Length: 116
Image (cartoon, rainbow, N blue to C red):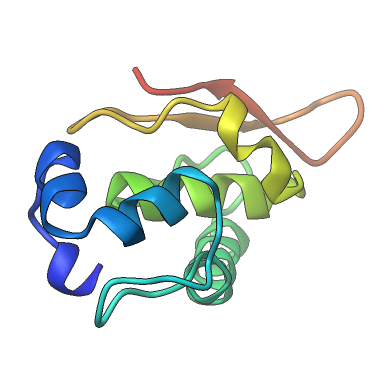
């Protein structure tokens, strides 16, 4: 998150108004210095989550701990959902968790719980 790291949304808007407006509009061309784009986060996080999932044996449960923004991007990527749906998911609260489970009938993953 670069220079934005540790800021509340209100502070982000006050210190970086143009970048905040671009963030609200889902425009990735204007980032705070040191901040990763959503595409960069997706390219880093999704393969790591897939590796975690692949390492699980049948019946095992895995836990991955990430920052909320990274987890939201990662969940969308792992589930194969287009990024355009991101606005329909609230950002994750601090210390919240989400649950993916295998779909026993169709195979693959499904989002069982979000932002708990």
